[in-house]
Structure formats: C-alpha cells, structure tokens
Image (tube, rainbow, N blue to C red; front, side, top):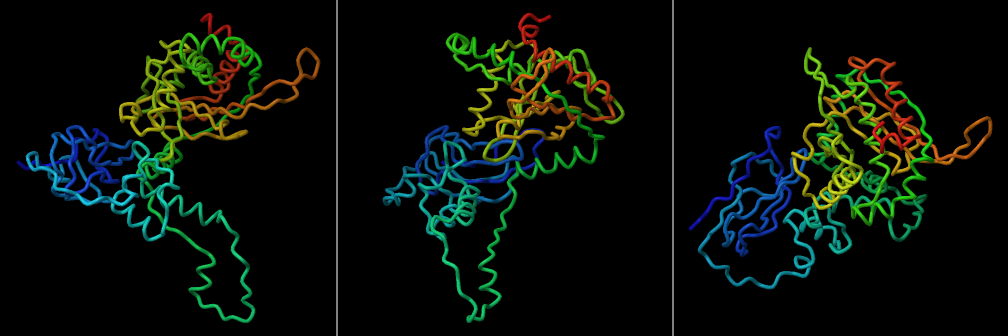
Length: 394
C-alpha cells in the first residue's frame, strides 16, 4: 500500500520552506517516526517524520527545492519489504549525506570526517561543505610557492585563478535576518544611549554562591540572569520600553517576555523567556541553558522564537567592547552587553581597579524619549551595582 509523504503544515507566519537534505533514499527501509528529510524555514529546521514503517519507494522533490505545506515530497510503501541493498560506501556510514552534498564532496575530493556538520544530529549540510572549502582556501595547510611569472604570459583565466571567488546562496535564516535588520533601520527612529556598570558586586556574589547554586539547581549561575532581573526591574518603571508600535497604536504589554540573542551555526536567533518576571535566577538560567541545547541540536521551535517584548544581546562573549545593537521589530528597545574589562575608576576620592562593562540601549525614538532611555539604563546600572536589591525585590 503506497502512502504519500507530504510537506507538514508550516507555521502560520511561514509561507514556504527549502528542502535541505534527504536522510533516506529510494529502497531504504524506514521505521515509524524516523526522520526522512529536513526542511529549512527562515526561522527553524523542521523534520519530516515517517508516519508508518515501510520502504521509501520514490522521492518527488530534491534537495534545494522550495516547497509549501501539503506538497508531495515522496512515496512510502507500507507493505513492501526492503530489497537487499549493496554495501554502501564508508562515507554513508560515517555521515549520511544528501545527493547534493555527496556530489560536492566527491567533486572536491573531500573527507566528510573532516567537515563539521551543523544539521540535525550533526549531519553535514551543503552550507557546511561550502564553509569548509572557504576555510581551506583562506587558510591552506601548505603555503603555495610564489610563481615567477616574469617570463610567462598569463591568460585571463590564469589570473582569475589567483584571485578565487565563491558565490553561495544565503540560507533562509540569514536572508530573514538581513530583511529584519533592514526593516528595523528603515522603519524606526533608532537611537542608542550608553552607560557603564561596575560588576564587582555581581562577580563577588556569583563567586561566593556559584558552587552551592549549581549543586542545588543543577545549572550554572551566569551573568545573564542578573541582567534579565535588572532589565525587568527597569521595564516595570518604564512601561514604554516594554511596549511596541502597531500602525498608529501603541501596545503596552503587561508581561515580560525577554528575548535572549543566541548565535548558532546558521545565524543569530532570539528565543523568548516567557513571563521572565515570574522566574527566579535558577529558572532563568535553566531556560537559557535549554535554548542553547536546542540551538546546538537544531530542535528549537517556531514557538520558542515567537513574540518577545524586550531583547538582550551579549556581544561581550566574542570580545566586543562597544556596539549599537539593532532593534528586533516590533520591539522598541534592545540592551547590548559587552566585554568585562578591569579599568581604573574613582571611588571615595581614590583610584581603584574595577571590572567594568559598557552597556548600550538602542531604542525607537518614536515611542521612547531620550530621558526615559537614559534613566532606564541608570536603573539597570543601580540594580547590578547593588544586586541585593534584585534578590530582596526592593
């Protein structure tokens, strides 16, 4: 009995998807629930599970094609037994590759074991192979000897080969990021205000309790939970910064869904800590840890990325000293964290060394006045420099 494998229902805000890779080929035996293919949207990777056990008899759409909900992908025979298959090459056993990836690997005589896969369960995607090739060209293992071309006429082709270029399509996620960033620049009156915060009290508190915290809650005590708590305290005092603009209306949100920017191999995503004001430090850290795990294994969902009233991004983990973060529409503000550096500061008339971080708040001036933005950062600074206020809720 033949059964049609269709594109699953896509999220409401997603019109179509790209078929990234097939993990089974015609003639392969599959079990019920086994992943047949990966679909990439502009937000997440979706799996196409087998509804029944059987044999995959036909693949209709190939990797790289754009598909929509309900479209026919393949056919599965629920009664047919898998025919005896010849032994597959070792490359298949080491890492299941889609036809387009296998072709690219073979054309460039690459070893799949040397390529880090960013797909589901570490599968190698076409973008992984292209990135690997790019890295090899940028940093060859052996230096190329200089060519003495003083007596050899070079053709245009030969000259071009000395200046290699590579054209690759944007992933859907990268294209969506570009679209949203451009939208933020064009549709908002964006400004950024800065401040600095002395994190000695936070660091001392964290060092004092981090081992007991981890032993009790089974999660590490990081800096982000302090910043989430401080941001919520400031958002409660300045509701406009937790609001958004919808046409000619202002929507004031009576809840605090905090977006935490996370970098993945596919690009930047912003999963949402919902009702973050109702979470304690352990709940915040566990939520962030969960997002990190999902981002690494590709299981983050559209629901995880939907909504949000305010965003925090931490460029400091990459060494950024100062930046102007771009708004995440339709939110009207975003907080940028940066690297912590020991700096000389004046305390009680004396110069002392303290761990200082620069803070940046980008905001939509259509909704938020400069005075509010400056005072908002001031509240975050005060909360972090006296973190007992956050713990005691005073």
